[in-house]
Image 1 (cartoon, rainbow, N blue to C red):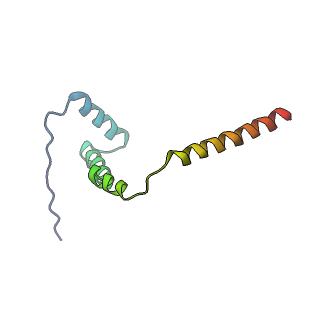
Image 2: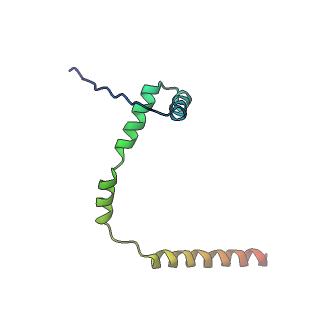
Image 3: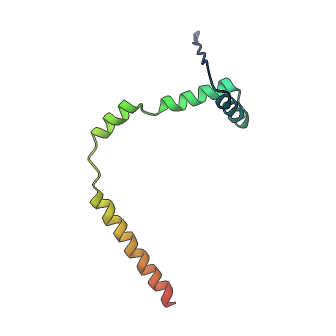
Length: 88
């Protein structure tokens, strides 16, 4: 089976960005081409903004009361721990 590959050319890459990409590729022991392909693969493995927002819309909202209660409980536990430590 023959796999055809497309080509992408990115023009007008600012020198500081190009230098940073080359350095990062070298740090990873990769060619610049392989590194950029890996960055693209990682990005495409994540949901896009629209898909992320659609998924988010299907979830139940997170209430602040639950978070505040959890924070208050954690603070209370910490106060007990500090009180026990002071008594020792």
